[in-house]
Structure formats: structure tokens, C-alpha cells
Amino acid sequence: MYFSIIIPVYNRPDEIRELLESLVKSDYTKEYEIVIVEDGSTIVCKDEVERFKDKLNLSYYYKENSGPGDSRNYGMHKAKGNYCIIFDSDCIIPNQYLTEVEKELTSNYVDCFGGSDAALESFSAIQKAINFAMTSFLTTGGIRGGSEKLNKFQPRSFNMGISKKALDASNGFGNIHPGEDPDLSIRLWKLGFETRLFPKAFVYHKRRIDWDKFSIQVTKFGKARPILNSWYPEHSKLTFFFPTIFVIGIYFSIVFLAFGVTFPILCYAFYFFLILVAATIQNKSFKIGILSLVAVTKQFFGYGYGFIESYVKIILLKQKPEIAFPELFFKTKS
Image (cartoon, rainbow, N blue to C red; front, side):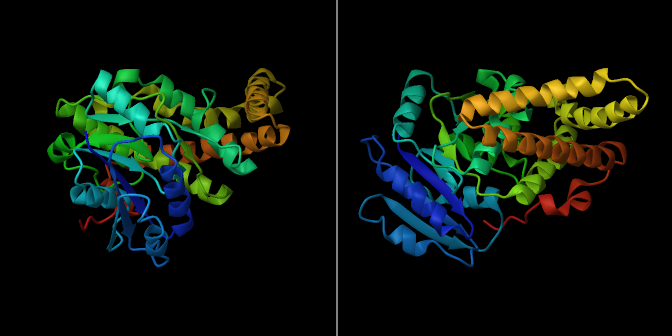
């Protein structure tokens, strides 16, 4: 196998520098290439890429802005390898990553894989709190992971791989964002390809977003899910409704409390206490435990509101997704 690493970037030269610095430290001894795709940035990373030309096998392309999915497709079509590995620009790659991927593909080949994410000690407190919310078994990250089998995993595009064979058959990512990665996974299944989680192929996902951007992001996740359910109803799951039910339940528990019924609100209090304890222990920081409460609350409310709005418009009112939520769709240009 010859790996081609594809990295789309938009106005983040500092992220590219950190990502490439981590790849320089890779313990993988075979040749591979790195394809950087500048997605219409006004703050370009070309100078940062040039600094690593003598250390890494790099190619750099600048294209008109058309979104991350289309930029990944662009990079994969420029790539020379027969297996593409895709990272977001805000990832830092452990030195054993490529070695672990090759081990998995050699022992049990699959045409598309996904890996998980973790937080580095150097990450900020907010980044660690958001990482907890996005990955914990107590949150929607856990709901997502629990609803997917190891051999039926839906890879996420910040850390995934796909063979050129599967890419050519599927035409790669669609123009929805977010939601382009589960959309691709389901289309691959329909074409007869398999996907799998590679547990040891994790990345450090920095997620350079503040609270407001995080709320916007998770709201978009919620909006995307009913769209995917309308496209692929056979893959809809009851767990996708849980954040919305969770949010509605909070309001009902407050109403019950006004009538002297305390049990529902106590259940929520116990849940958030578990979040505080788990996040504090995992990160060895009470501060991060408190911030994780904020992250989980924003996650549930953002996703829950986005989901119910999209469910009404897409499922009940039968609106076209591109018209109901134009902000979720890019015009492809590659």
C-alpha cells in the first residue's frame, strides 16, 4: 500500500504547521505523500508547507472555496497513492499512527476505516471540556459510539481512510456539511464496501473553537441528522432522537418542580453530577469538570434544537434540504 494523506485547510496556517511537525516525528519508515488542499483561503499556508519540503513528501494545491468535502475529493483525485488518509487541519498525529493503520489493513483489510480522537495535555481547558463532550460514553459521543458496531462504524472525516477503489466507486464526499461522512459511509455500504473502526489509529483533535462556534457546530449536526434519515430511512435509529428528548425533558422537569414533583429534576441533577465527576477524574481537574458541564449542556441543547427544527421541516413538512438549510450545502467545483 502507498498512503496519501489528504488535508484540506481554510485560513489555518498555524494548524498546518503543528500537523506537519507531528508527521515529521512519525515512526513509519515507508514512503508516503501528503497533499495539502487550500480551500480558497485568504490566509494561506503555502509558506508553512514550503518549510517542510525537505522533511516530508508534500504537494500543495490552491483552489476556489467549495467546502471541506469537495476539497477532500479534490485532494484524493490529485493523490498518487492507492489508499487515502484524511485529516482535519486541527489534528495532531501520534508518531505510531501510520504504523497502526498498516497493521490493521494488513491483518484485516477494509476499504474504509475511521479512528477516534483524544486530547493532549497541552490543550486548553475549554478544548479538553469539548473533547470530553464529543467523546464520552455519557454524552452524545457515547450514544453515537454505542449505536455503531466495530465493523459497522461510520468514520468521521477528521480521521478516516478510504481506498482509491472505494473512492472511485462512490465519487467520494457529497456536498452536505456537516453530515458528509455518515452520508459517504452509508453509500459505501450500499455499494458493498465495509467500514471499520481502528481503535489504535487515534488523533489528537484540537478543535479550535470557542463556545459560540461550538454551539453553532452541534446545532448543524442536529440539523443534518433528519436530512440523512430522510435519504436513508433504513439507517435511522431511535438514539438520534435522544438529545431532543433530553432537552424537552428538562423543560418538563422544571414544570413538574413547580407542582412539587422533584423526581425528574433530581434525575437530571444526578446525570450532571456524573458528568462533573467523570470529566474531573478523566482530566484530573475540577475546572475542566465544571467546563465539561457547560460543553455537554451546549451540546445537548444545540443538537436537540437543530434536530427538532430539521425534523419538522424535512420529515413533517417535506421541504427540500437545500432550500430549508442552504447553510449546510456547498456548491461543488472540483
